[in-house]
Structures are given as structure tokens and as C-alpha cells.
Amino acid sequence: IKNRGGEKQTLYGLGLTYSATKQYDQALRVLEQALAIDREQQNRADERLTLEAIAQIYDQMGQPDKAVTTRQQAAAIAQTSANSTTID
Image: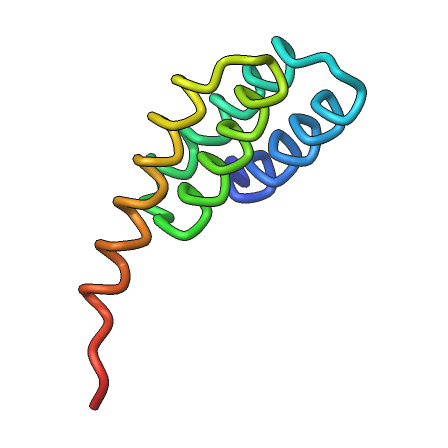
């Protein structure tokens, strides 16, 4: 049995480390793997956070168009989550 949540957290942390050391291609590679796990597990909150991290890397790489597109995906998740929240 695989611990996909633990694997995802490790990949996410590794992606942030790569980003901090300006190894942006490696950061994107592992964060895309983390994103795939978020989606596989249907973890919308983590998916949004991972997308935000990816967008930040695109900003650091001087690719604002990709950053905007990625942030729009994250915003759509946040909006969907807000709309599905009900108050009893």
C-alpha cells in the first residue's frame, strides 16, 4: 500500500526547496507530480496550494502568462470551494 499523501508532501517540500535554490525546472517537475497526486486524491485544498506554488515559480522564471493562467486555475478551485460551503 502506497502512502500517496506522504509522497505528495515530500514532493511538495522538494519542489519548494528546488525553487528556493533557483532550480526552477526541477521544482516544476516535482510540483507537477505533487499536483497529479492532489488531483488523484481529489484534494482540492492542496491542489489549489500546489497550483499557487507553481504560479510563483513561473513568476520567478519570468513567465507571467503561465503564472496568470495557473493562478486562474487556483482561483477557480477557491471559488468552487467557497460556493460549495454551506452554513447550517
